[in-house]
Structures are given as structure tokens and as C-alpha cells.
Length: 196
Ligand SMILES: [Zn+2]
Image 1 (cartoon, protein in one colour):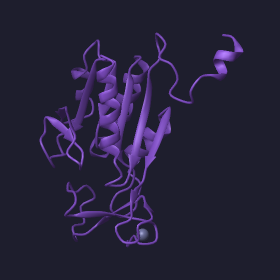
Image 2 (cartoon, helix red, strand yellow):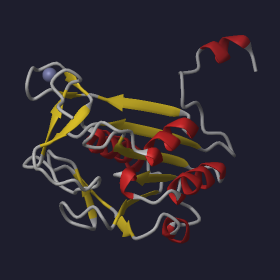
Image 3 (spheres, protein in one colour):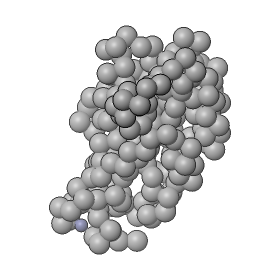
Image 4 (tube, protein in one colour):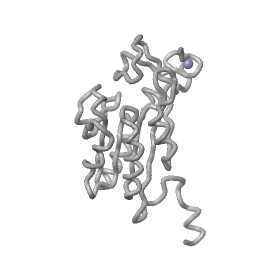
């Protein structure tokens, strides 16, 4: 390839050769716009007439199960699955782009599933929380970030001081690591305003 065209390449992800798949991870706290960004990328692919399929976990029951919905109520149709491996049997042969929302709700198998889909030449776009309500990283999300070609860290705005925020403060006293909820149960906090 001539030098000139190589230097004109965008950063990552690059171009989609005959065998080129990859993984994009969009991670951050609650209210950081992760799902919105996922929906935006999937919409662009749809506009380009690429075949897109979207999955989420049956655990995420905040809104409708047959759509993923961002906090600002943008939505896109999706298939809810119980286990990560179920995605493999539901992805169509001709599907080019696979979106996965709230990846932290899935079992460990999701990492292998994403890798396999990318190895098969698909673009895999994953969104999820990187830390739980205690500020502890979600192992599944971290693993995906490790193997992804492109990682986007989304920041929210701290509800207390207005600085960039990357933590989700739980406002209720429940001790469950995964508690499904939104504005009434959590708010975004920065490092300084977050209370463990
Ligand atoms: Zn703050």
C-alpha cells in the first residue's frame, strides 16, 4: 500500500476488509450517555443498510424488553437473551453489526461470544457499566475493554459539584451488586463526591 494512503487512515477502527471484524466498547457510569452512543452508532450502520442485530440481557427490565432505551428515551429494537451463548445461535449469517447493551448483566461467557463474533468478521459494539455502585470494576466489562480494538470512556456530570463524573452513587441502601434501576436509585458522582 502506498505511504500516502496509509497516513490518511483514521485511528481505529480502521477499514472493514473481507475478514475484518472488531470490538468497540463504550463504558462509563450511569447517566454518561453510553446507551445513547450505542444507539447512535447502530443507527448510522442501519442508515448505511448494514444488517444490524442488538441484544441485551433478560435481567435488564427497566423499560421494554424488545427495545433498548436510553435515559432520554431514544430506542432501538433488540432481542433479550438469558445467557451470553444464546447470542451465537440468534445472530444471523448475514449480520454485519452486533450491538450488546448493559454488558455487565451478562455471564462471563460474553467475552468469548464477542471475540467469536469479531473473529467471524463482524463489528461488535458493546456498551456497559465499568464500575458497580461501590466503585468496584465489573470484571466482564474490564475483560471486554482488554480485548476491544476501540474503547470509549463516557463521562457523566457529577450531581453534587458539576465536574466530570465516572461513578454511580446508589441512593438506596440495597447491597445487591446488580440492582436494576435508574434516576430514582442512582446518580452520577465524581471521585471527590462519591461516598463508599
Ligand atoms: Zn463531584
